[in-house]
Length: 264
Image 1 (cartoon, rainbow, N blue to C red):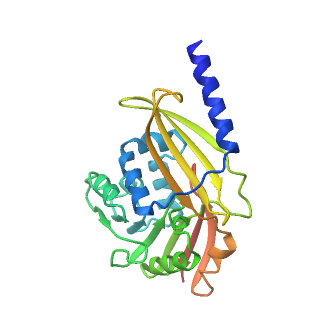
Image 2: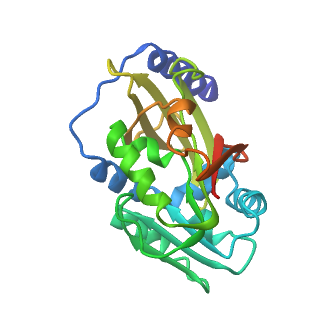
Image 3: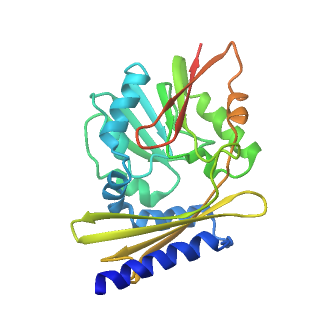
């Protein structure tokens, strides 16, 4: 009976979340990402449960980007993808959240480093491949600011190299916001994540994360809220004009579409 009660409670919460329009507070993105850093230790298990295996993603990127010798990861988060790279190459990840960079820096491997940085001021250097995964650039809500960020990342791509951007929600194709549950097991027991999305009047997506340890009816241990801007493919492609760039599309295993722009 206990299992039936919490299953029914989970169904009711999901139904409520799908009907509710969430509102954003005035929390700065830097504060939201610091909240993200608080549950960074749970991220590896969570992403595996969602089908986003870092080693699978890293192998796929290494292959479709032509086995680059230098990789820069913009908005690297916990650094799991770079740390899982299948070859011993120069890898640099940066994020503007000091908490995430501190967590990523625990991954001590040869030729792997992590820095605090922003999209507009990425680490200096020239890289054969520059990555922006997990729809990181769509957390920049303003179109002009996002365009400046892309231009700054383009400046780090070596001749013949590529900028690979995982695309997030697209207003032309995205489904209505909904709530989902993900379950996985960590060293300290079973965890559940409820992710609920809603659109604001300006079409920004608000994503509310709640982490429950034990079961979906248990108290919330961590809470995080993100804002992300849906962007059309047309907008992205316009930033890579021919003949300076050649654009093609791929797909991140367990993730979203991958725009690959090669500097010609």
